[in-house]
Amino acid sequence: LRSSSLSLPRASSLQGGVRLSGFRASRRSRATTTRAGLDADSMNSLMALLMGDKSALVTKEKALPGRASKMEVPEKHFVTGNTMEQPFPSNLEHCVFGSGCFWGSEKAAWRMPGVWSSSVGYAGGFTPNPTYEEVCSGQTGHTEVYQVVWDPEIVGFADILRIFWQSHDPTQGMRQGNDSGTQYRSALFPATPEQHKLVLASKEAYQGALSKAGFGAITTEIGEPGATEYYFAEGYHQQYLAKPGSRPYCSAQPTGVAMPEYAGGECKLPEKYFEKYGPRPGCTIGFPNEQVQMDELK
Image (tube, rainbow, N blue to C red):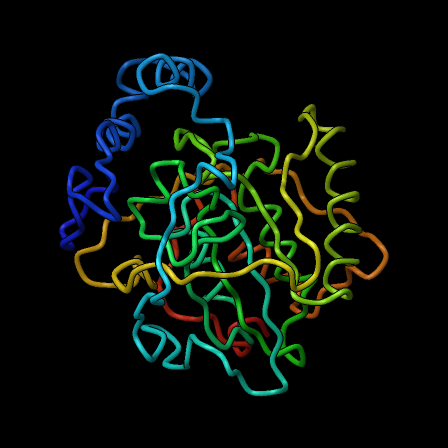
């Protein structure tokens, strides 16, 4: 379990009729991996022996049933003060991303100038309106994701894609860093055909850069336009890292490989933003919680 001074549910509690034994051990491995001298692959092998194969996606027939009731979330974003649920103002765009643990990923998004709001949730699986414990059991098919809502007059989709690709290692399959399991797989769920086209172009460009740097094939799951249901996570997860008492944890592993130029990938934010606030190896969340203002980039 992601330990924190905030009150979080115990992993051993019953949720949706499923007792998640071993869940706490999976989370505890984050703190002990370095101390024990195990690399990520060794830890994955060990956890597979202890808890079964966490890299296999559950089938629709075996997925947890979920529920019809939607998750209740705060009305306003903790940092921007704007709404997190639709309908959004008609001039805004939105997209859903997954890059491992959603705490740090969401923070990287809400800090970008022009972002209206962000939220964290679950997507890509079968179980309707899942709980956090259910997702972490691996029996929903979902991955941890974050939704970004932005003003395209200020920040472009290419800017957000650049932060997405550079803020984690998209070649790691069913894990990110020491967080292992299908719920940590890299994913992109575009809302429109235009977004989908740019997602594919950015993936091809970043794959070329990663290959030159010695990385393997990108394993990011890419959904069809508007075809993936987004389910909100519990209220205590929303903007978690901005709240008093939160633990500054993020499992994402930036590769340090820059996004190269590609057709349609021109950014609206100045290069100074990426140089000053962009992700870097070993640090994705070591920045203030406040949203960056355009005046800071002049």
